[in-house]
Amino acid sequence: MGIGMVREEGEWSRKNESDDLTAALAEFISTLMFVFAGEGASMAIEKLATGGSATPAGLVAVALARTFALFVAISVSANISGGHINPAVTFGALMGGQITLLRGIMYWIAQLLGSTVACLLLKFATNGMTSSAYSLSAGVGVWNAFVFEIVMTFGLVYTVYATIADPRNAGMGIMAPMAIAFIVGANVLAGGAFDGASMNPAVSFGPALVSWSWENQWVYWAGPLIGGGLAGLVYELFFIEKI
Ligand SMILES: *[C@@H]1O[C@H](CO)[C@@H](O)[C@H](O)[C@H]1NC(C)=O
Image 1 (cartoon, rainbow, N blue to C red):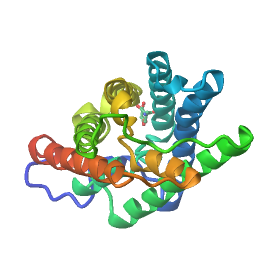
Image 2: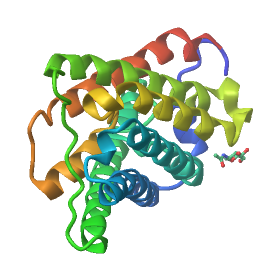
Image 3: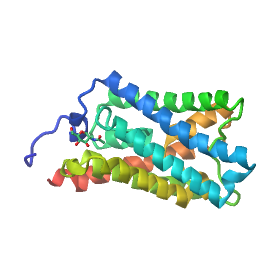
């Protein structure tokens, strides 16, 4: 790309030539798969041992489930929708000018629906167990969680930008979704014991809706959107434009 060339659309969306509706469908299915495995894993641990998801082994198991599922969810949708699977990633892409507002809104709806359907299917499949909403552990304040979510989601969206949006790294192929899944898994190990380490408003929304508990829900939106938006701006300003 020549210096000074006007970009009407970012590299990210040029790679994905699917129309908005097809791309949104891919986001819906991938988010459903990701949330089903991630929330399902913590319900499975609760079934095996009540309170088990609050143990070190439970934390590792949930981190693994989320890492595996996100790797696959992004891999299968990367070349269709860009593999966002997360309203904070979509917001970051919007901040960096990589997608249109219409496409962004459609992605948000698809992601929130995908997460909700995953939680409803889990409730049905488990005979009424509900995926519990993301919440703060004892002794963790809402501002602590705010910082956790901002920093963790910054890392996530920064990685998405570097591996999927940056044309210099176009050759990363399947390593791109792997890198993104790794930072999410690592962040679950870091923040999971404090606030559940959501980094994704869709992931927090589905369980909150299905279990109808909205306490501190705002922090699981504000943190990821601020962290993700910041990552999009920083990457666009300092790295992508300097090719
Ligand atoms: C997307 O397509 C390109 C080739 O068109 C390929 O090199 C890359 O591995 C694909 N990405 C994923 C995640 O499948």
